[in-house]
Length: 158
Image (cartoon, rainbow, N blue to C red; front, top):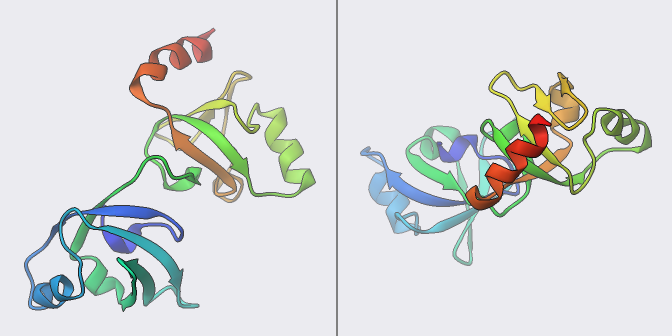
């Protein structure tokens, strides 16, 4: 994943920097493999964005951030729209009463296990639903580790 694609609030680890004329400048501000970066804020039109590297706040345009390949740190809750297909635990729902009620009818409630399918539909203990990008972006999830994964898949299938 490119640094420019990371959602605001997420923390990532730098995997590599693609060769470019500005690669030395990125390394000079502390963007190196293994370093953690937090995405702080985006400009109103989305470009540039602010990042926290060590104790410094830096601004990068998307063209510059495209040169940095990163990996999300899984323990951090992310909106369900930004995660890869897989099995997740719902940590929080950032929505009002009506949206929460709608999601709960689909089996999407806090501390429940859901599966994000490749077509962005959601499989819950109630069934398979297409809840839409807007509502899916309000569902904060964390990836379930492999040792819990097998039990969760069995529970979802029953």
